[in-house]
Length: 255
Image (cartoon, rainbow, N blue to C red; front, side, top):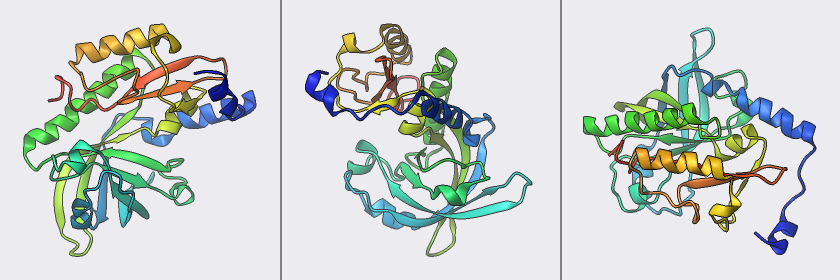
């Protein structure tokens, strides 16, 4: 952005460290297959639903159960919280999007190995059409993955939600895990820059053209590259910056 901002940047790690981080991020088990991941999430969903403050970071105890490499069921504790401004704060949705917070050590050797925080895209309301919106948004992510590896990875999932206090299932729906911001940056050999000061001339023009055309083709106006609305900027040690979009649920392709 300028000399003052540049001086505030932390020093870059050695090239060997960046390369190791890149290899680790690329190899995360969660994103090695497109097969839907079946899991059961148990928590106090009523309490999460009541927590409608978009700035709230209160977490709730939860457990997640999924199949291990040998087919046996693995159950792990984690923390869960709601997220999202429109869908959460304005009560647009009956079921809030979620953020899952794992303890990395406990996830070693599982499909969630290496994961710390993950966004979970969920259905908005109980109607079947809202489950289709999840599938359509997942498709948008996969289309962008085909166009460029400099994009967020997504993993389709089949979720069973269980009410913690009563232990009663409250629904089975398609959902979607989205790659963490920092994991994206590591996979691209860089880091996230969230200063929100980069105009079009300050990011890679070829990549910007590609993702802007992609947004146009899926009919998405819920994006602002300069303001970094639904966009993350990844910068590399060489000084390149890439505007990577996400959140396609308001696009014409989805809804």
